[in-house]
Image 1 (spheres, rainbow, N blue to C red):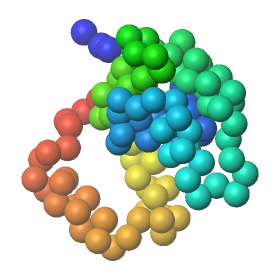
Image 2 (cartoon, rainbow, N blue to C red):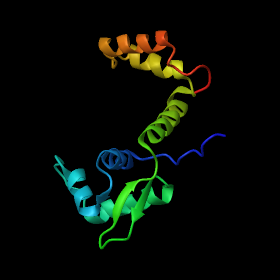
Image 3 (cartoon, one colour):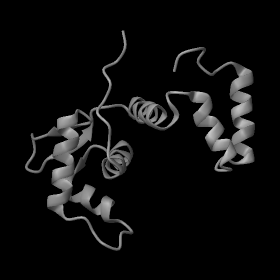
Image 4 (cartoon, rainbow, N blue to C red):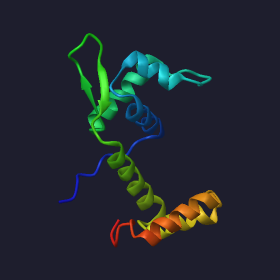
Length: 133
């Protein structure tokens, strides 16, 4: 049975998910500090709270209200989340074609020679899924 597809993420939501996958569970203040690390123009707590509310409504994160401050954690495992984002990107920009996506990476010279070597190894070893996605 196919897993229910996840709603798409904005760039800011994706950045939050990246932090949550690395540091969860995390409270709002610690998350705000992580989000603002190295930023010239910091995100406000209200803006962060709005983004967290949206992510929770989309089903990407969960909130634990058992302590005085809210604690957030991913509701979606990292691999599933990244796969969902990649499927959406592949569909939107490459008509669902895996080949077109990889061809774009190779032709744009955004993929390194080391990555190409690794990709060749993956293909030769048969660890790449057969057919479908």
